[in-house]
Figure 1 (cartoon, rainbow, N blue to C red):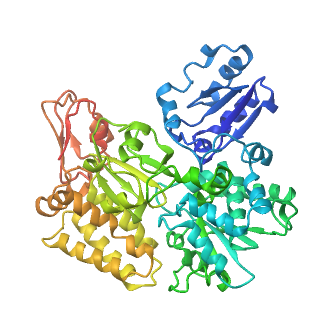
Figure 2: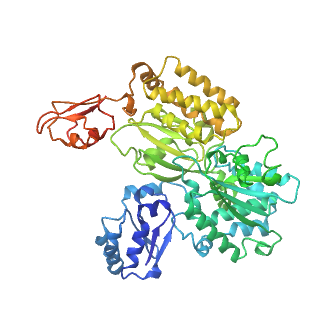
Figure 3: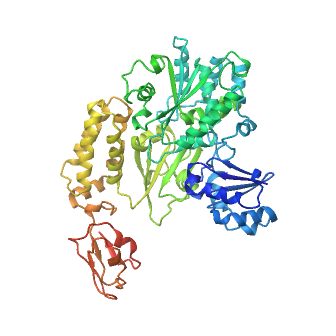
Length: 580
């Protein structure tokens, strides 16, 4: 038998390393215990997969205390020993309903052993390109596939590659943008941690296509495990002659470099990323010239994100037509999403374009994890927008999502239920973009700050008549005047929440109420005397002693002393504390 423990960041955070050490302390043969990356079922971590030849037994939510039972199962084959840990058929559907291309090896192979990647046809596509295809033919295959940049803009990959190849100059650079900055997004991190050789192979193919001898991965320093495994993969590839001089005995040579960035959201914009690579503050450049003509060190450069490169080897091996057969007319192939928020099954989902939001949130994600109704989904992170429940059947492609006012983005998908305040949600994302603004242009630097100040006033009950109209006016002014994509898209969360949840803004401004009961300044806690049993639990948990009463008698909250922390509301077992 072979025991494989999921050790992506999510698995390690959940205790996977403790599980591995506990299993090593049993009578299980240590050589049969291996690791893998994230399979995508983050909500079930730690995960232990047991392979008996072709038969897989998947154990979920494993703790170190389960090690003896797992050892008994491996020794006896008695599934009753681990029956409580075996993944349910319902949870198994989380993966079975996906189509995995970029994530095809994630959670399957050991990311620290190059031989396991090679066994999965690894570097076969690179060899094919170098020995059978010209750079122009490689670009044609990518063109046929319809692969668009997965970083958010959806720009045709072949067009960018062709522009860089057509630029004059012997020295060119291929750059991978792994500066994943969206709150709630972790697709790129998971790919690098789980399948780093797939990224390397895709980048080498791209470098061959554009004529680059230098490949650079710009990854945020907050991803230490991803950096560690990528460094390891690069060294392994160098040792086998896959990176360096005369790769596979051909005339093609390419070196690799990793740059750990400081984690600025604006470095998702390619020219700001280049500025950071060069050692400057990450601030966007004026365009034109575009990076294809003048990029890193003013040399022709091409930039794509991790997920884009993660599709390339599969496309070369299977043909551009196979990739183009999936998806919609204007959006080909699959897309990876990081599904988070108030959903039962949170994690990584890869589906063909053309599926609906309902397919992801309810069919794969399992719907709401609370008894509250689905309210909205935030698509595209701080640059995206909120799509309401009545648009749950929106098709997932660039055009359809754009029509709602949201964007595909890099793939963040935050699910919200009816307890979420949409004004507060807009404030949260605008607070992020206002802080992440590089400050180069006035519209973004000052405009986002003024909008944030207005949203803060509104959520405190200090909104004024005309605030909604002024917010809209500011939104369009910032979109029109900002220099780069950060400022141009920063108003999206505000515009979409006003468009679909204007009544919540009006309630905050006119009635000084938060319909979702989330804005603390607009909440008042009281105790229903008919329901209160006088258990004193609320009084004992109140941090400011604002609750008084005797045992077995109704209690009272002093609203003048109450700091609205909500502790009484959360601890009451009789629904006696009322939030209004």
